[in-house]
Image (cartoon, rainbow, N blue to C red):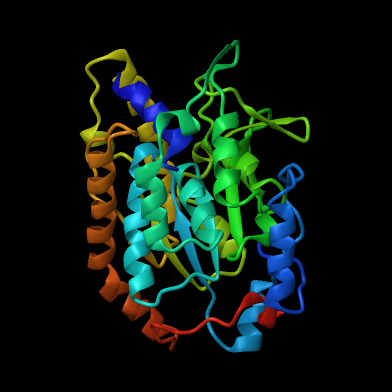
Length: 332
């Protein structure tokens, strides 16, 4: 039963390139977003970077900040708590990289929602919004409702037009390669990123099958570094193997995934500048409102404990907290 809740969580938490086309002002960008809100976006894909972050660093003489949000099913609510603390302290990312649950929260945040709005979405989400069971030889859960839910929340805005550059990590099923979506259908990219193989029917994008990004990069720090990030703040919500129930077959299955992801993430997290790790020992039921509240609070607590570390990293780069980032249209 716990496993069923855990798998549902990965699909729904509520829950690559970025921002808008080269626009001359924010009005034109808003117009494009309004237009897309009535259209079905093209399929998700990995397009050319809209922003050269290394060039941006040279132009503005400042470090590039990335927020990395990892996988972890229902623990993904903790991402919202962490964002709340970062936002309150003027810590704003230049771009976001998300895997699985992190791709859900990340895409909503990148669309322009603030922490309070993210919280409202999380608390109002209902089972019928995201849950769809469909028996198939490749899985029992269909992610189409997750795709539609995300697209509804972001007004059908494609990845390249989100207000903050967003990179969604998934796994190409046939060869097991890491895929980073940054353009096209936002909901579809998120659907791919949360699709646990064997449980969820793989997402088909451009005639290729994609599954959970947590299989190859549970906390995608290296993607952020490769994109040019100087300061990486990673939120790690993975289950610790020591706290996982192993007295039944579902618990053992969960533990197999936890061990694999734990060691994959352990190496990648060494390359982050600050790692926020909420203390969440039990996965709450994805639709338990009280559980959502406590999980978000765990994110708040963990992020507050890391504020001093973040300040030190910023000081090392001679970058003040509470900085003001210019609108992306102006940067270009």
